[in-house]
Length: 509
Image 1 (cartoon, rainbow, N blue to C red):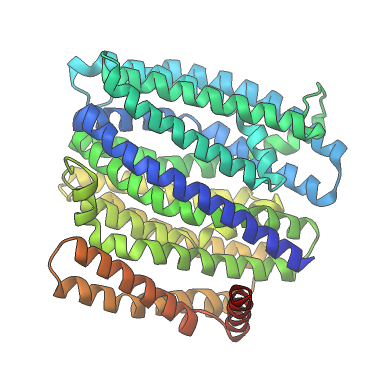
Image 2: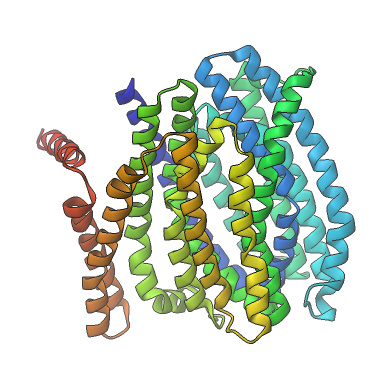
């Protein structure tokens, strides 16, 4: 069974990697062209206005986590009748959520866009168009959440992968249409993005209904289940709000002190960071359902092992990609963008460093949410996350540079990790000393040793394509070698050796 689960994780990870690689190549090209077509100011307006709508999705974020958790638990128990009841009730609740978020967006959110953001007066009409289209996109996205949660719970990552690649192609088509359509480019961009959301939502709905009988909506109501879902969502809500404010709240704070140009720099930095992180998210998405199913089956030993190996692998995968980018980001942005916004380079480096620190937490989050006992976990970790906004505002107000919110974010991420580790010890009986020895120490040692050679190469060579290729090659060799020598246990190293030998034998045949 363990072997079969490992094969499923490997297969799903590979599918999601293909999806991510394909999607991100297109996304990086498309965002470069969008920045070129819209200009830095309109690009920044789109980024910050979309961020306001993103902050209003906290209800859906909490409910999405609850839906996926409960559906995966029932799959682990193989109770399809209970699965359909949860799915149907979740769908009803998501309809209500969509209505509530639209009400919030059209009152509090709309006021803030028109009176709280730093947007040039001549672009307010376009900004309002983008805002309304973003609200509609969010409402449609909320309605598709139970279907996406079902695909994840069933571990149907092939469908998720194909949908991601199809969506990437549609977004590329938008770029070409922007060149052709002679109207306000920002407004046209928002309309076309909304059309993409409609198409993807329709496909998710149609596929799930046809493939899974348990995803066919049936009107039913269970007060006990509703309270359970609402209770889980309620406590998770605080953590979701804190997570959104940690990122999108700081985006608004930076707009207040720096304007749309700073938001454009942050938007570019997050484009690069998201492209890199999505590679790791493919692995996390493949592992998440298995962590929940291990907990549902009361397999604590398997849960601990999977949590530790997935934490370590997530970090190593991100380090492998992020290290050469962090070193060569000035040149990469230069060849990617026509006009590189000020601060984009330093923002990108700090965001990637924050992402590296955050990779350890993802498996912990899945494990803790699987327990269902999340009240104090969300209160403590959510409170830590919320510190990011007031600290950023206060330090920017007294004159600290624009980089300070990202430095604070890294600090907050590390403190939140320690809090999650404490909760994992008490709720999942995770052996902390073993975790630190098998995960954190190897990760730190690999990072410190692997970075030496790539930095040496970058210092000794002049900026250009040759240095980029050299640094990338040396980084891959250095990180891979250090992972093999210092990052793996003896058992893990023997497993890698066996896999390499098997692949070599197949190749020789």
